[in-house]
Length: 507
Ligand SMILES: Nc1ncnc2c1ncn2[C@@H]1O[C@H](COP(=O)(O)OP(=O)(O)OP(=O)(O)O)[C@@H](O)[C@H]1O
Ligand SMILES: [Mg+2]
Image (cartoon, rainbow, N blue to C red; front, side, top):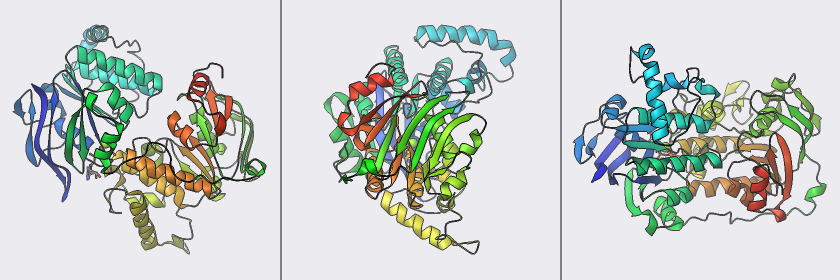
């Protein structure tokens, strides 16, 4: 029997169909992949199942019976739980409180002990080891937070677990653990719906895969009977190449060019991960990769590079930008000198969610002479520019008036990239450019980055996807424990060697 069945489900926002006549089935006790291009309607469909959105048409069946799920609390009664694309735990509360919060209103203080022993039972039963029950959630790594989200669902006795892009922000080790855990849950009879853009992991870990496009289902495949190429073609309606195929301009005397960024013996103190005596140079016309397992100082380095002023007390060493000492500059000043930025976290650092696309596009560009004259904003010019970007990057929905908070995750990412490139920066700091982005859009974004390089821009590329770095970079720095452990030239790139260094081993 199907644990879940969508029958002709439609969900509209205004006149726009986010889901249209969507039908598919998820078998009990399986891991079911849900894939599709950015804005295809995956998150919307799962939010409808979880009772966040009412359906406009059609019905959802749970265990073969039509279910009118009114809200998330009601969804829990049907045994349905969801971990969102962007986590929703309350940071300052402890893990335990987060798990029992909302589940047993009014009685929390009495039931804490009972809840704790129940949770310990659950974590043993499903083999999801966890001990930091009384730590505040904000002190946990992303992977640990996610485990808490999953434990919370199990505590609520969910039989169907929905995970919306759970691996986008995890380290490879955490990804491995997550899938081991999901496998255990499946063996215990749970049903798991997994949204992901990473076709490799979908192919490796699911039993069946439903592909969505423009709100509809294009089809459901048995995982063992399909492959990356077929799935990509179904998703975007054309063949997709998984490695960069475009031209890569050769710069004859690249290594003689004057560096635009020079870092010498940089140390940054940090409560998270310090940066220790890092030195490197970044030249025009190159993409320099920063590889490393998340949490080895890369985030701290990027934060320093974009806002050194904030670190005047906690950083030592040299930072030269365009030949000048930049160690005392703030973000606007560095921007004015030619820095473009794609931040690590588009939601907290990149976008104003209750502002439209044009407003977001202008962030950090208000002073640009293309968009203002004598202190007056040239809104029409800005809107024209955004419309051009919407075309170029296929941003959906294609209306400049849409609030960025109402755009799908991948489309938000495209907007942030388009903005960073628009200011025509000579130095680009780019972090995780394709996080949450579909395979078709990855092609486009990779192409845009290499084109900037070919135009002579200097690009520092932070990514947790080694494949992406190997594909795009001219050189790569490998971080471990806050240090640059090794540097590779393009001709020396080797997955195994770099992987070893990322793990703290020898080259
Ligand atoms: N609250 C909302 N108001 C208006 N439009 C919305 C809202 N939520 C989603 N949409 C629109 O519905 C469409 C589907 O969005 P959804 O988030 O379901 O896509 P998705 O398949 O999850 O994409 P991604 O892979 O980028 O996360 C998008 O075009 C989006 O802009
Ligand atoms: Mg989504």
